[in-house]
Amino acid sequence: MIQSLVKFSFLFCLSFLVLGLFFSCTNDTAEDSGNNEIDGEEEKESFYLGADLSYVNEMEDCGGDYQVSDVYSLFAASGCDLVRLRLWHSPEWTHYSNYRDVVKSIRRAKSLGMKVLLDFHYSDDWADPSKQIRPAAWKNINDIQILGDSVYNYTRTILLRLEKLDLLPEMVQVGNEINSEILLEVPAAQAGSINWSRNISLLNRGMQAVKEVSKESGVDIQVMIHIAQPENAFWWFDDALKAGLSEFDLMGISYYPKWSDYPIERMSEAIDSLQRLYDVPVMIVETAYPHTLADADGANNILGADALIDGYPATPDGQLKYLTKLVEEVRTGHGCGVIYWEPAWISTSCSTRWGDGSHWDNATFFDAVNDHAKLPGFEFFNL
Image (tube, rainbow, N blue to C red; front, side, top):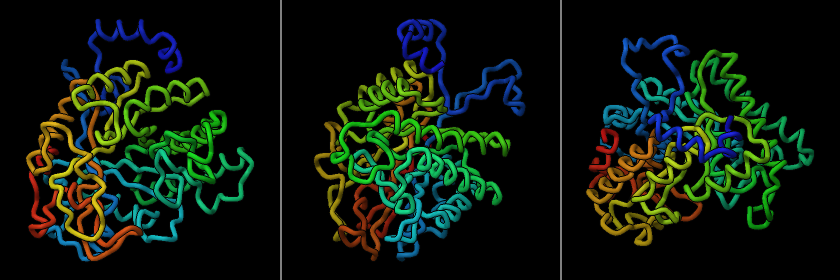
């Protein structure tokens, strides 16, 4: 169906305009959901306002003080309904974002009624458009079929272990910002052009594992494909579908104005176009904006003056203004949610590989120079 829509996108766009159809993060209908009684009214579309809280456990262990007894409770009480968590395969450079850490985080989120988006990086380290380095455990696997089996078995094993703990996520990302080819041995710039046959074969095996566990467990787990910056999603999905990408449930997009060609005022256009072309809901799974340009520690700020856009100053109110506008654009484009990346990566006594403290202290929802007092950014969850 997806491939047909790509081929005949113009005709389908016309039909959607006439019918006024909307997308949502859940594809249940009155007939197939089984648990929702509509009583003559259309089911409300789902729209998530969430946070990536992957750093929280580490920040707490580093002595970070959020001025509350439980920061997860603060996010839940503020209206956060979806927690995104990254998972690295077997990182030796950190004790966090591994399976054990993710179990702790999922349990914290679900105990407070928040849903979970689990982000498989398929790496021992950060995976992003510039690097998709395979885990060390798979380093010497050159046979694509065996590597695909490794992706499948690893994904399935993790999810089955979570099922036994009653901690299955509601959504799963098969890869993180996979603009470049996944499971490489070298950075993307050194790898050359994407081998689409190989790339899609590996991605399909990961998605297969998620779909099988979902079916076998009876738990609806939606599969997401995640691309950095909306302009890249158009060419990537065109090429991926031609190469045989299996059906997926959600399209995840990173949107940082600093690295995107799309101004915030055109985000509704981008999201609406992507949904109409590929017939899947679109969610912004990463975004952020600075509330100050001050640097509170020895770790340089990733989002500096070059991350600012006209009319949105680097102030607490400017941060909230940016989020308000972005949520408005996503809703107008019939997207299904926005997740803020690392609003709790506060400055602590711990170090990264590049500095002491946090590289995100000026883009969190906490005031680094005022005892980490809660900022207006928390109002984002009620937009």
